[in-house]
Image (cartoon, rainbow, N blue to C red):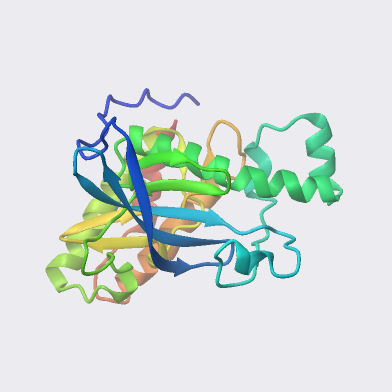
Length: 255
């Protein structure tokens, strides 16, 4: 299985190569493992841009640590062994993770933001509709903000789409899934909750658990699950979706 080379894709014009200051504008979203903060980057030239900073919480915080770090919720990590199959770890780290030692927990905590940055970058370069990955930080990643000063883009579940928009959203999603699959990537946790809708555009988010066909034997099964999960949302809103046909096409692209 050999993923196709990703086409060239230029960085967005709003990302400037000049000094800047940043200010936090508050929390956008609190999830199980991470929280997403809105930040404003102010460049020396006077230009400004809104970004999101997704920060992963410590797995084993000390008393008061989460509050000191600015987090609002405690940490609840998903069962992640299926997604770790493609991680490149040293033998020592792999043993520590398998035996759930303190060092193993530290490895997992360190790897989630690394994996998300890697997968988001691969997805962007594959021309999928995802936020642009700006940079990795010590505890997370900075990426493009989908929204404007008035509001963040709603999740698909909250977007109140018309019949025509629902059909457009499915068509756009298939385009992005073709791009991901051609690039050798499976989201592996796709649902209407990690799809955004903004000004007629569908955007895929939350890729820390994404896997690659070349390193994870469960990739085809995870791809089928992704399709079935998201297709159910569209079908409940009256759109006829052929999951098996879509799966067959995508697997063909992967191979």
